[in-house]
Length: 255
Image (cartoon, rainbow, N blue to C red):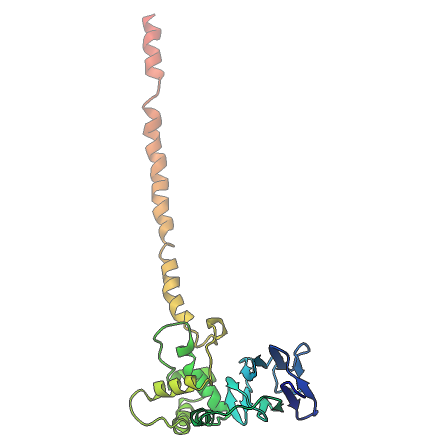
């Protein structure tokens, strides 16, 4: 097969990639269907750009996408790379080879392999910094614990292992340096505010003053009632001044 293709290991089927984007998942309308419960309905995309092919995890599955055993968000692929979508394994073929520099090879191997729980921790760690808000620090251990519904001590143990895996030396702002490294390697990606869990979404913090601001005009009802009562009392003299009775009685007696 001359064009790039993906081979599903379970069935042995070799499926050629489409010209632009090839979708992968468990749904009925994807281009490469994988009948595995660990695969999401729309899991990932294989994108062709000239002779190059890269995989993009769509972030819609908790089981992620791996290239040669390493969890990725987006990665340029080479011939014979092994892709794992959830538990389903595939292998790339037909991709034109190209000499890569030593620096590129080093960066390809720099991403450590993470467990599912470690990926959850780094995702929760980086989520505030990847929101639309500017100058937001990564999540604290307590915030991560609330997000993942685990103890703060468990989160700290995971962070210690992540510091070692990503080779983050001790010192100030260690969590920030870990988050920067994770984002630089493409392990997590920005997501819209609407996709954030309710318990860590920053909107409720802004909603408190908004509700307070709406509650201020509520006591305006008595303020409106005061002039409403004053207007009838003021209307009585306005009607009594032009009473024409005395004016008509004088000429009647004179005649």
